[in-house]
Image 1 (spheres, rainbow, N blue to C red):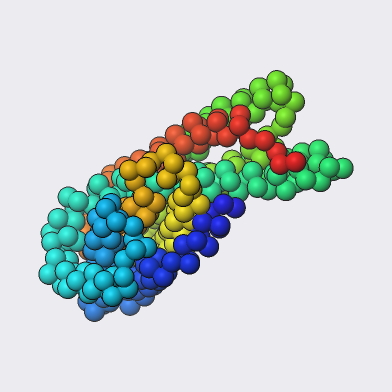
Image 2 (cartoon, rainbow, N blue to C red):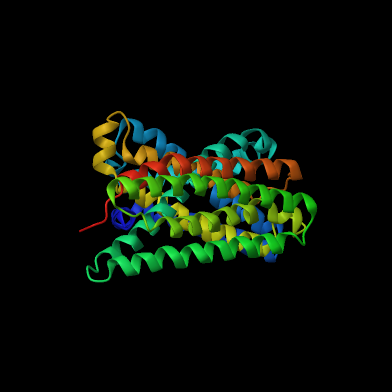
Length: 336
């Protein structure tokens, strides 16, 4: 995939290796804190994550006027030391006193990009599988029909199991799950109609669509667990299971976003001449870090707010599925 090539470019940059390492270490501390809650661990997360946030913010401002690659190592080190000192002075202002006010903006930006890149993962993964099966000239028809049938059956089975499981939970949660699956069903029907029309007109079958449906359903269930687990299955969002699931998905999406951005260097430089790739990447990193570190701040999130957050992310994700899904179906060509 292209994002892997982009990641190779990212890992050639010591600065981004440092940012990814600190981001990962912050998450590990959050996980440890979920098991052994302590004031020391909480402050460690705020210090480590806060310093990384200020570090990324300063680099973001510098990147607007000067390429990050041209910065001297000693200057970058001084910036980080300044970021650490700023964390001691400003962490309560940024993460605690005004956290409820400023948390919403980074959250919505983070949700938008998370939903978009989650869609890209689902679409890219399904088309890559389909392209691989298409290479086998003698059996491409059979293998792709099997691909379509098997993943469609698994999707229907998972949908059924999901409904059965959540039918035994509280009524509000079952209603949310039912509505979510209902929306996805009609979106999938719309995409399937486009697939059939394309098949009739061009004689080309988008067999990957059933795997795409399965992957999008899986991500929709992740949204459900990530935002509503604490409200319905646990005493709070600091539950270890909740934090572990968030870590694996968030960490992968973090790397995927960086890899995807850096795989589009030529395109971004050609189309967005006033923006540098580093500027875009650092902006996304800032949004991601703020939402991540804010998980450690003790605050009571109402059940209605949790549902609204989950619904917002799901709505954006479905929008990308419908809009870009139609474009991907019409534009996709099997590799020869």
